[in-house]
Length: 104
Image 1 (tube, helix red, strand yellow):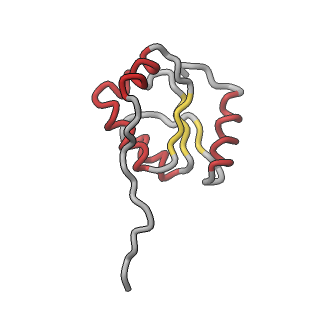
Image 2 (image 1 turned 90 degrees about the vertical axis):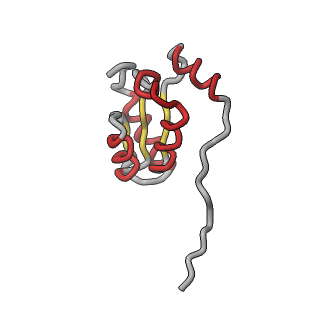
């Protein structure tokens, strides 16, 4: 039996200076993670400042495996999808937004 790779996960090539600026100015309210690799790649992009930059930002996870990756990085999950889909992730965010305050 051969394994065939259907996709490859790679770090994004976005505007890192803009992202850092928005995080420093507290203009980002929610960040969603849909896999463990998105957690690792995102935090790798932010580097050593990641915990400081993410303070007060809601971190939302698509499910328990992704949440575990967030926790392994020393961060807290604010919202976790009960159904491991994008719709489930949105439901978790909307539910958490009712009681969440920046910096909780």
